[in-house]
Amino acid sequence: MAFLTVGLCPVTTMLRTAHVGYVRAWAVHFVSAVVASLLIVACMIWPAFSSKEVEFWFIVSLIEQVLAEVADEFRHAPLLTTLIIGSSVLGVELAVVVAAMLFAPWGARDESILSSLCHALRRTWLYTAHAPLLILLCGLALMPLWGIESEWRQASRLEWNPPPVPPLNSQNQPKDSPARKEYEQALAEFNVALEAHHDAWQMRYSQRPWLVKYADLLGTGLVLLACAWSLWAWLRSVGAPRREKPPDRPPLCEFCGYNLTGTALASRCPECGEPVSASLGPDARPGPPWQHRAEIGRWRAWWRCTLDALLHRREFGRTLRAYTPTSAHRTLLAINLIMVFVVAWIGVMAVLFVENDWSWPPRNPDAVWYVGLFLGITSAVLALAVTFLAAISVGIGYHVADRRNLMPVTMQASLYLGVYLAIWTALVFAMIAVAVGGERLIRELPLQQRTWVEVGAVCLVLLMNMLLLFGYIRRVIGITAGARYANR
Ligand SMILES: [Zn+2]
Image (cartoon, rainbow, N blue to C red; front, side):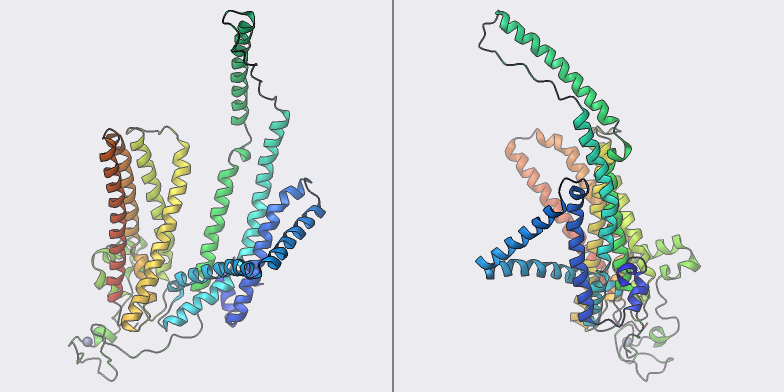
């Protein structure tokens, strides 16, 4: 059942498969990967097969041929072939492991860092069962779409008149000879006919059916939806709650990390002198405003978290919970990605506006859609990567320094800094707009100076991005520092 349910109700599926060990989880992953690969091959063969361009036996013989070729390679160079096939399988497996490690902070708890990483890997392997279903659904939706498009193309090719043929060239004829005049006459007729043909074709092309016109956009949208579904289900799988409690911790002073076992709640920390109640009292570490958004209102909670995370990182870190599992911050991932996507789209419009000599609409209005969609999604994917990379790398860094797995906090910290990512995106697009606007000025410079200016601009963009990445990681480190000795 997991093959069907993991995409639709990942949390329930993960709770029901909590007993599945590593070997069996990997087996599920391997079987899913093989079935998914076979489905991709089937989707590629199916259009030719269904339109009766090829016979069933032809496909069988083709597969036989491929297998025979592989067997032949094995006979000639057994070591090299084994290495190539083995390394490509290993490469895919390694990519899955890296992705699982990247998502580990999402489902991490205050436990040993190895348990968090292994847990993410096991659930990622179990989640792979979603791949065959995704590919099957995409194939079922995309193949009719492509079928309609190719049918229209074929039909237009068949019923359409061939383009006019240019007359034979006769340049070696003398200028006033009748043959030369005849050729020029024919050439003029040909040009008129060609233009008419071109116009008629344009007319027909612009009147193509709606589904044919938007086949590419619909296909891209469908694949994107599938990717978003996959990301959602994968993260839900990795972040599904766990039945067993995290291991017990000794009570610590939240300010210096001193072990407060046996110290009275009314007294002070023997090490740093801060009141013990500030570390262990009922009001200590209440959770950030976003965790109480039902009481204080979503909008206010979001603003307060954003400002605190950006401006008062240590104090903000003192409110975050490391031991008690929380999931309030997870909704912010969707909010942050949408925010970055929208900022990037606005950035694309600004760049097109500058490129079009500060006027609207741009020369190519379709670019607003295609370039906006493409760069919007690229920016969102980069923001996703930066969010998780910061969470895992700072988590590992704190583990090396403190021997404590703070990934539950680094994940919250990097998500509460979403506005930082949106500002970063806006700055990148502002730089592109400046570069596009300044291009005309640069073009007037002599070649040598122009090269220098261009190299300088590229270095400046790289430097700015490095500094912004550094600033982001520094903020995640700063917020996490406030939760180093968290008891809750
Ligand atoms: Zn203390």
